[in-house]
Image 1 (cartoon, rainbow, N blue to C red):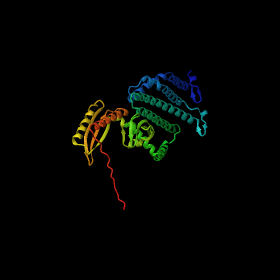
Image 2 (cartoon, one colour):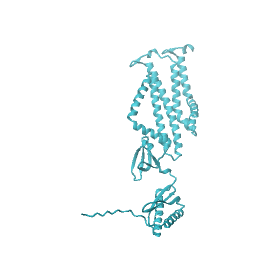
Image 3 (cartoon, one colour):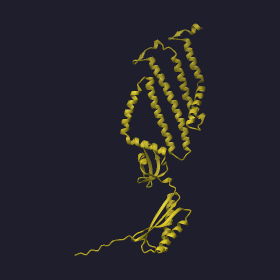
Amino acid sequence: MDNFLDTVILDNSLRSYLMVAGTILLVLILKRYMSRYIAGLLFRVVKKIAKGIDKPSFVNLVVSPLETFLLLVVSIISLDKLNFPKAFDIKVYKVSLHSLIDGVAVIVVIITFIWLLLRIIDFVAMILHQKAEQSHDQQDNQLVVFFKDFFKVMLVIVGFLMVLKFAFSYPITNLITALSIGGAAIALATRESLENLIASFIIFIDKPFMVGDIVKVNSITGTVEKIGLRSTRIRTDQKTYVTMPNKQMVDSVMDNLSLRTQRRAFLQLELTAETSKDTVQQLILRIQHLLQMRKDQVESSSVFLSDIIKNNFIVQVEFFTAPVPVADFNATRQDLYLSIIDLMDEMNIRLAAKENEIVVTREN
């Protein structure tokens, strides 16, 4: 029996073939259990990054690529213990068949490993997306999607460099240097786009506004409908659709009207100089009384004589309401203004008229 197992076929004994085949068969039988055990170990690491995740869901997601990765690694290591047959020592396009097979094996292992990491990124992103859905901030969803795609692209690039390095023995140092120089040139050519991209990171992290907020940037006032990686889309109060570069959203003075705690109304009454002091004082008291009677609508107010100029007295009326919808605010303001007009008519108070200067010339 020992003599039979020592029989050499293609530069390897039958004993070696059986040991390699037995190892691969054993892994093929136990790969499900081994992959689930390793997936459990990986889960402990992922759990620290995203707490509250479901272990069965994670294991079911990564077990398939993990099984393939384990089987390929063990098979390649086992087959490497065999002597490569001299009969197959031929060249294909100046490359030996042995080197070609090794290169293909390395490529398959790297691809499988990258596939496993991509599945882990998908799972973490899915958990973070579920948590983001529980909040009203829509920027969290966009941030999760962006970083998921970003890390996937970076992982694919790293995988490509690994294939060049380990499968083809290509000196990637020169390639990385060339890519750095090319990247710098592209960065200079696309400076504006990069500035907008960096500004989008600032918006996502700092969160000065979110989708649905009413903002005022420069002369543009409207509702934020979408925040992209390059620009922010705003639906103005004239119902037009404005695309604002993210850099401008960050660099400009931006007023987030949705975060205000009150709405302000301001009225300036210019009374004629013939109005007596007692009448002015009585008007101020009666306007204050009007505002106090609307405590359910007006949270705070002030009425006072703000200035005395040549031809009129300036009475300033200012009041604040809760951050109610603009239609309700306008209705409240209109009602108070009409009441003030009735009050002035009742007290026979007139507003100062604009002076007109008349120049009379005589023709000779």
